[in-house]
Length: 114
Ligand SMILES: [Zn+2]
Image (cartoon, rainbow, N blue to C red; front, side, top):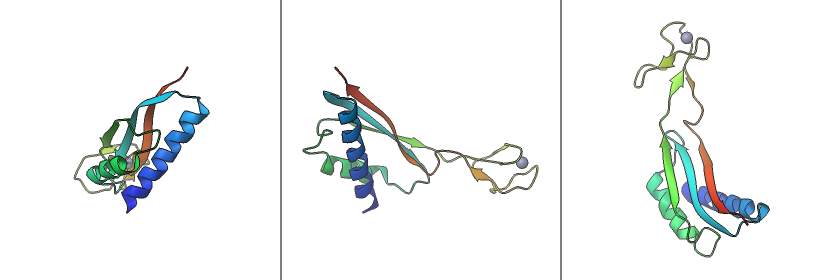
């Protein structure tokens, strides 16, 4: 499943980061997921709960932040209202998805570093 491989990659990344910074412990983890990332937050949480056992994330709570997709005009930068046609009303340019709308990103790791 999509969510499972994303979670595995996430945990691998957290472990690498904790090792690189010589962390004693990881206290928290936050992930931003875009509305169009195609990730089901509940499945993602379930996958996380499944995979974190025995890893550096075993006791670490996961915070998921959902980011709404937003669109704007690449030419005049006008924002395209939610639910409107994905085309700029001023210049007719096709709308462009703003950053974050389709991404899954590691937003922050709370590490205890000596
Ligand atoms: Zn425009």
